[in-house]
Amino acid sequence: MDEPPDIDIWTMPIRTKARFYAPLKFTQKLLDNPLLKNKLQFDSVLHKLQVIQRPFGTNFSVTHSEWQRFQ
Image (spheres, rainbow, N blue to C red):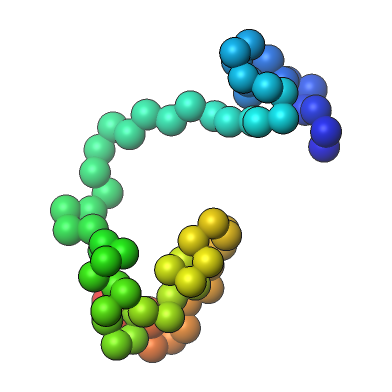
């Protein structure tokens, strides 16, 4: 949609109307030891992850072998 009906909630006056966003506040860490990109790039299984190859996408799929490696 070009302009949502609640545009004032999603934008601030100082920003252009072409950029929608929602402010977030992190209240807790989800992981004690996060998986860092610079480590994943050198992993024999995880270096082909879609999130590394195409980091600006969304909803990345993970192969069975990649998921096993995560676990």
